[in-house]
Length: 209
Length: 209
DNA sequence: GTAAATAGGATTGGTACCAATTTTGTCAAC
DNA sequence: GTTGACAAAATTGGTACCAATCCTATTTAC
Image (cartoon, rainbow over all chains, first blue to last red; front, side, top):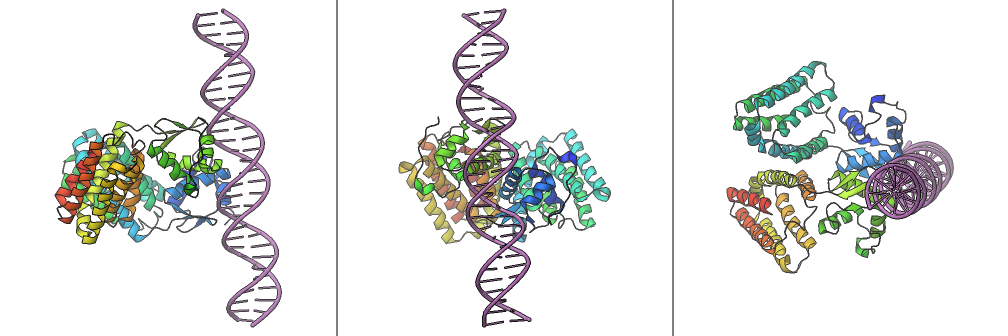
């Protein structure tokens, strides 16, 4: 387990926290895997200190778990936990539905539609990570329309907390196709200012995924 | 600024993060104050390393802000930010109202009432920190009734993000008295299973405080 | 007298080293 | 053959030191 190559140079300047997080979300580190500091040190080409800080941050975000004198391992997401977080996301994302509809201009709608298209486009050619990020971009754009700057980070954090194993989600292609279709439906609901429909769609969308 | 006594021994074993956070919430460090590592080191009797980690965590929680090569200073809470966070809290705490009412037993109600009493009792004799914690305990107990384990940490974090200056909140006694009264009204609403009333109370309670 | 430049002091932040703890592998006893 | 104890290797976590950066006060030139 102690033999892994150094990654591309483009990531040189990025924060180790995000690099590790990305690798966890990409499925490089499976849930339960112990993240040894020396391995991370060599893999990302960073000092011990930065690795430690990164792991501590991820532990705070509940992405990894810290066991004293044992180390850090990727968090094993519980079934109950997933439901709880889904419920919170539903409360928040449906909670802003009215505000989003009220504030969304026709330009906002077309931006959203474009993002929905991009997600659909990546359906065949994209990697898991690209799909994940395209999906994230769509939801971020939606949340942004509420005009609540704080909501952003809250939802982002919630997402990170469950998406430890994005591979286990979205296992079937048909599931992703449904998601893509729902994105477009959501855009339509916003365009037609149908709040109730939008809320129903969001709840359905978050729960099933 | 580099002369401060060591604190009581009871806090010896506690995490530096919480100690610093508590001091910020108590108003020891006013918003905008620069937190010098050496000062914290001597004040809490901890190593430089633990202080650094604590500051990094607090920076992640947006309680303090980090400026490279300058240090960490207590975050200056924005007015807009306060409103945004209040809105999120309202979405979440009203969102679970139905579930709370459905699940709350008569014993749960009496526990809540007891916590509401405790808050009211501290109104005259308690310190700012004690009041803050009693209020926190009440809200935590309420949130717990929803049976969503994750919601706990989310709301706790949201609270920490604004309560950087609890002194500026609750400046008048009458304001606190209103809060105490609202706590009791909330308990009554739960007891009578009046969901709409409860939601109205919560929104009112969070917004005004 | 004012403003720029420079030297000094203080603070942060990274690197390296060392101690404490745990796990793994080996050997012996039952 | 299995179980338990013991030793060695590996890993974590803390401490101390040093370089880089920034702020401040004094001096000097105009």
